[in-house]
Length: 340
Image (cartoon, rainbow, N blue to C red):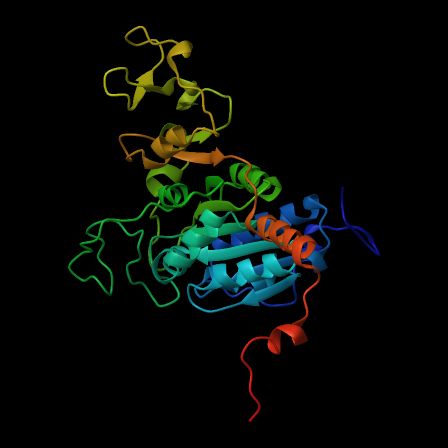
């Protein structure tokens, strides 16, 4: 189904606004915005039935650039606003844009509960491993030893992995992609948009001003095939030039192991088949240490589950059947009351 306007089917241009896009030249956010606007017409959702919600940060300018309803809210609290919107009107398509600082530092608690409740909200987390809007402080995803304006002698913190966080919180869909890899990003975004439940998509996003080339070790064209693995449900976990490398479970340690086809008797049958419904496989893929292992891109985990807002609606209907339609006036004048 494709939503139509007076001039015909909706296009990418219909989701663009008259606002000047104000990110730094070369920022990965431009690519993310273009890919999102390109996908939206495919969903067949009227723009008045779509809401984009954000917190604070460079990524949080997103609602201004989407020709839909939108809320630019407060630091770390976008999940609460998105939850309220979805519960108030479950028929809306609700999208939440956040960053590694906004979503995982001040907003970590909010995001955790949004994911565990399985609110039918699509979360896009832009991870550039830095605070960009406030000019280059280290973030929850910055690597150990990262020298920034707030850690002049190097960060002493161990970084948080967004996908591991989402899996541990009980998210029903967890995916990962790269800002400028349009084909892979589009495929994962499309899956998220059609998933029956809440979704979490981490997007590696390059901040070319304060943390340039943070992901070059696995995104540069010269190394991409050997250092990334695009995972798809039901397909073998192969990567490398010519798909000559793969992942299998080491029978001794029961951990993932990188193997090369043809070496030590390794064949296609030894390679692990990706099962996106298996949380153990998803967690192992999310936690693979780079560069000893490739970086997993794609849908790591996806399992349909009853959503939070539908559970609330069912509770309300059961209450009405048992107690009848409520009255605000009766409620306010019940019990102990007094007149001043």
